[in-house]
Length: 123
Image (cartoon, rainbow, N blue to C red; front, side):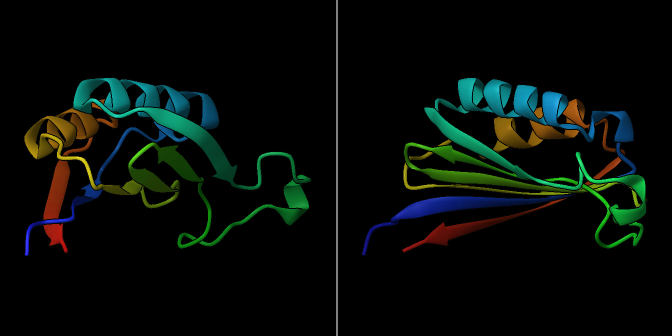
């Protein structure tokens, strides 16, 4: 059976937490889609951006932003953890893309000092 799709999983550590905001994450998605030849569709965020300070997350495992960038061929999912300075990203597409370009762009964009990548061929 031929491959259906490709998933790139990136765990980035010691990142520039100044990039952990909606505006910058949107910019990352636009740039990544352009570089790997994907057509961006809707972008959604989940965070406590507009909540009162006493309702905001304070746990290292929950304080951050989740974004899902739908692309024509699947999605890009981003989870930032502000206190820990880490970003977890999954790029999945049934259209092939260059994993080396996606990895180096992502690592550079978020200023990660460490990056672990896993590639899964789906199908």
